Image (cartoon, rainbow, N blue to C red; front, side, top):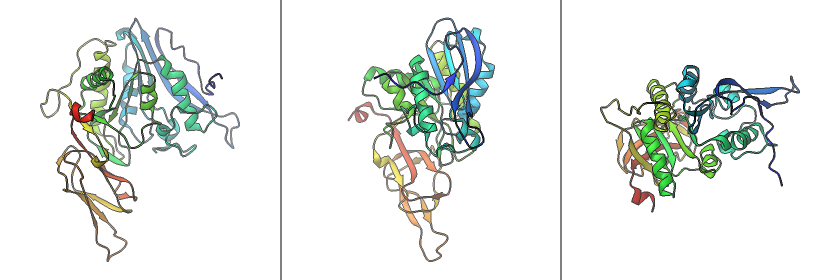
Length: 344
């Protein structure tokens, strides 16, 4: 049975040399426009010979640093400086981007939990299907820029799944080192099977993500690291000339490789309440130490609940919005990467 064709149309010629900008148009019938479309910005640059690199931002609408970094890079890049092809979608989930939300306001779905998608599904499923079936077959390397959005704050980092294939793992870690964020986190996620990263990996494409801030704001250093990291990875791959600049603000020479190996790295809220964190991301923490207090300010007689870390290491993510729901992640702790432990 033939695979379903995408319902999203993009008239750019991805094989044409030079720089093109336009839109992928996704059909969206609504009360005021029966033949309406949603326009998703796309920029492509092609010159010479070399790999195809996909740059994506705005998979979640309230994650801003990647949107800024890729949009600026798309405006500034000179096609003559490129050896290969760069496909840029700075605001993938444009309805969520314009709505300033993680989920799409069209169908209330998380695009990054809809892969590989469905051409006949909801808007988010249709968009995931377009990326998986139209864009990814052209791609050799995927760089997907995320932050922790409104839900958390993250230490500035690249991230990647643990890959059982040693050569693929080493290649991805080398790309992460070239990106040059303070940390690179190898992790085993809570719900990863339907993400863009998983779709990329199923095709054998090098996949690298980021977490460059959060707490619902544009992180100044996150934008700087994101912009530099995009150019660094392209230099590492030979798409742009020059050597990656991986120097760190603290004087370090490069990226510190970390891992989030098991569920004990996560601390969850046991109840709804107002969470008071006790540490900032990138701080060293210890198992059993207080991660924060869950307050119940509406009930004057109810004492706060103390939430503790279940692993020692460095705080990767901390809950950001103040009020959390039962089952929300309050903190995630990372530890130094150890290939022997990771493979266990």
